Length: 209
Image (cartoon, rainbow, N blue to C red; front, side, top):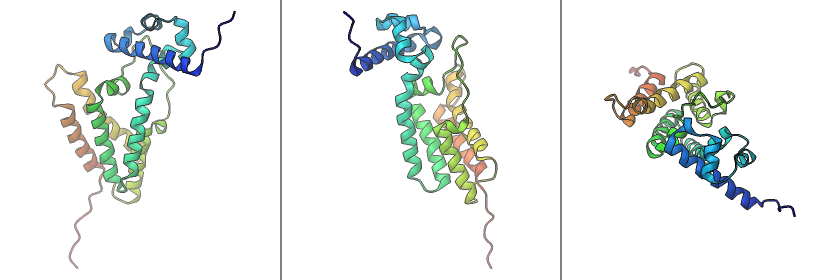
């Protein structure tokens, strides 16, 4: 007699079981050691089950961060929507990015500091304007330029530089923890100040009539 097809609840439970196994193995051994066979053994399922539920090992690993990253993007979008001034909004977005790195270190390292091992296939490159954080930065810079409070230049290029500057301050103490560097939050705060000063248009003081 044929086995009845799995219900949606059973499929979700199986996915969570596999994701939990993948997350724990990743935390213990690092990305380079993660294989479909290792995850399957820990989850107590066949390797075929992993591909049946996720399509590929890469898709499985990406799914570990999808929900929390979507929640973060929604939070950043809400933050941006509440701040009318584009310069203040840009500052708030960059500071929120730093806060996420400090308060969600495992998530931040898994999604934003991930270094792809040679054995894992590289994903197709996507345009920068598909990244929600980049969209928010670009929009803030473009509005600031339209108001004459931020200097000219391609908004997307400037957004990329701003993001890279702050991200580098967060990554450097992690990647070079053998060096006596300032804490990530200290470096990032200084970098945000430098970036905003560089982008801002300095207006000459008004002279008396």
